[in-house]
Length: 377
Image (spheres, rainbow, N blue to C red):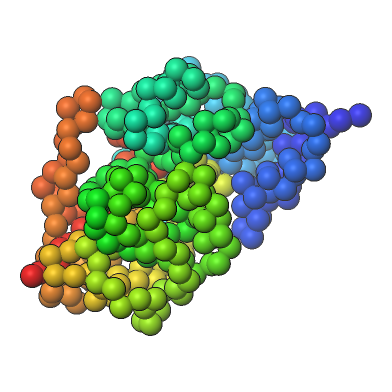
């Protein structure tokens, strides 16, 4: 007899640890469930993430089944009236205590963390209108290529995905590439490219012209990037290993360098609630030192008049304003560069700020911090 969805979710939760995050445990367990319908897999995923989203309220319960039942009740109550959860409750239970000391924690952010995240897509230029019709997407008034998907369809199995017509990409990540504002024919370096989400967007914005260097310290990520770029028909990039050290992968001088640095991931806590209970203040402080070194190492690669863009999906002061302060104090050859986002469909414009915090409650996606400099001529 096949396990129930609740039993499978419980199996996932029991296997989760700091070393094995909830999403990895979920993939591992679901892989063993042959012939599991996609709607059942989706329900199991929701149950697991609901457990960690409401963990602060249910942690004292000893029985896992009771915890899952209570998490569902809290979620139902939240959907009925989000403001029924007072600020004191949110501050005490939505996030670990260290987070309140290491960052600003407005009540709207705490409340946003308890809602289910949206699934964001980025359409390739010119494909958006067709995707709305074919996949039933919801348009956003902010960015012309950003859409929300609320259905049960497995998007990775759609012919449109395999044709490279869209990428699964959070709206905050999309904003970073747009704020880079790369031009066709320029030369850019995506220094911490990972599996290429922002690189793919940079390539699209550059109309597949010019060149993007893509580096990462993990060869497997670059291999995944290669497959992803082939599907998305992004051909103007060159992948290279780089460990983040002082020895750079190229002597090229760039029109723009993007450092989307490794971080504590606080900005992803709505989408990845398990991380709330594994990340620590020490993690944030140690990663801040990594971020500072990365910026120092890449700075000489920016050509005079070129841009240096720093982004992290976190909100701690150590990894945002303190990193900027350190860089400003050490790099006299750079000046703050005002970030500009062209008016969106609802008229929203971001302009004349060299640092920007993208809050989940404002944009409906991850939390993100972006800073920009221009190398003096």
